[in-house]
Image (tube, rainbow, N blue to C red; front, side, top):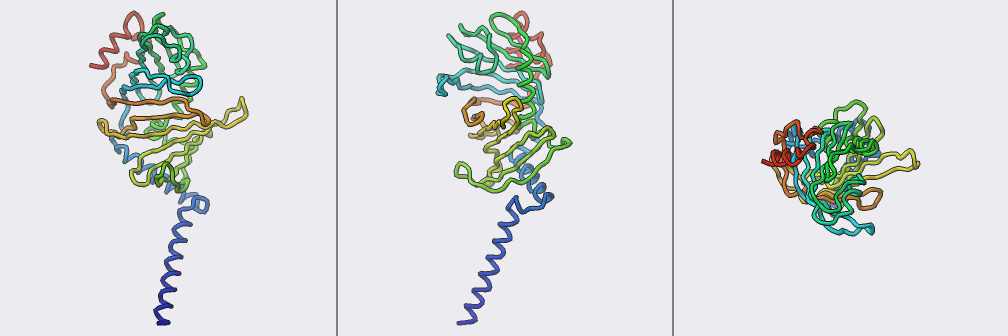
Length: 295
């Protein structure tokens, strides 16, 4: 009897030692930098494979349609607006909104005041690298330099650009951020810092390997503070070769900023070059290109 008890104690101690060793190995604060980087890169590899592997990484164009929520000054949803977004990665984005009836919120929501959309109609924003234009009832206008700067910063923060194009970028550091429970799911954190000190924190589901949340932290030198931009991804569905979150919600410093509900998405549809040129917006060209791109 004493021998069995001794054996039981020995086995228990051994099992406890194994559990402690495993816990220590998973603690990001006790891991060697090389181990942390290796584990972080493995989680990123699992994430990319879950998104579709080459079917995800080889995407260079996307065309999605859906609804964007309109928020009132109190933060409540006041309605929705239909949109179509055509994108050529990394920095060409054309978004077409169809405003119905009286609408005073859209211009401020997309960061461009002065658009003539109070009586509805087609509104287009077109960004192409360091240039940009808008189309509305009054015609074609240049997008202000301040809005272009905001767009270019958004390109650098974009998670799809990060995962598809930037992971081998010089100066990019990857580390394992630890295990956690988020939204009642077991998750793993991956932390990425780029050469300009943007800090990405990705929340990856341990079971599905899908991205649940991302947070990008940047320094606001003007206001001497850190800004946190959080994106929440839900309702994943397979579209073409890519698993896509059909509901995407964004928060800025804890306040709800935007919410998108995607209905359809196509990848690498072969968008015409003219779609991202200013000429497509002139003299009714917007409507013509719009119809062509949807056919």
